[in-house]
Image 1: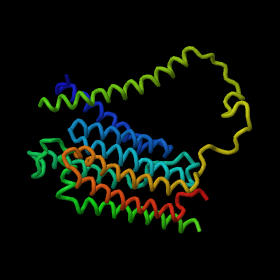
Image 2: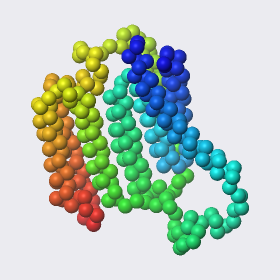
Image 3: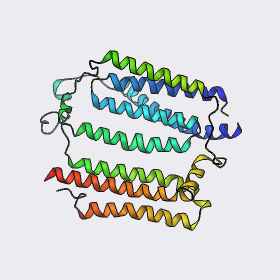
Image 4: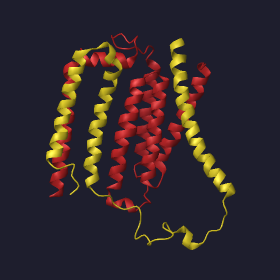
Length: 169
Length: 124
């Protein structure tokens, strides 16, 4: 039903949306709209992950970035006193340094992608699908790190509560 | 790459849903622009036409208390990310994985219990 060219069309469309929304994030005057365009950008990146058959990564992208990180950012904007001054300038003074760093980063990324001839999985068997394998590994080989994650999350939650309550009193 | 084509065409319906969703909103706006009368005056552009006039800007600073709820949401969102591969692989894993996940959730439940006891969930 879908052949290579159709996947190509979807890829170019998603890349176009990512680039346009990414440009909007760094150029719009109202920071709230910037955050909304960032959501669109991250959601399109999830689409790219699906094209690469990285379904778990796409789900994590939608849950963590589109869900949690975007929510946190929008909350941070809404909790900021200065938000009423909607007109902000997005350009700062260090344009030359910024352009230099971006160009170096872009060139090194392109070189890295170009030099890597074979992209391969780790030594695990992913024939059943990435998500199933990941779930199995988390439950068997990486059991202890998995349980430690919940301890880490617990620490983060208690820390957040302690900090937020101290601020109030 | 037969598998690729099959899983891709499953996601094609997702793409169609997104386009139909965006398209129906745009179509409704376009249609209402075509058929509505155009007669603006000053009172009409007030947010509440038949009640009290709003005071101040709608872009105001929100209450800080919302932030703790956002943080709690983020914590449990990350938990869901770990639930997802477990749920997909659960059919082949059996009882041991269930016990593991119960421990995982219990540790996080302790955090929720702590928040509850500390009154962080209360709106004071």
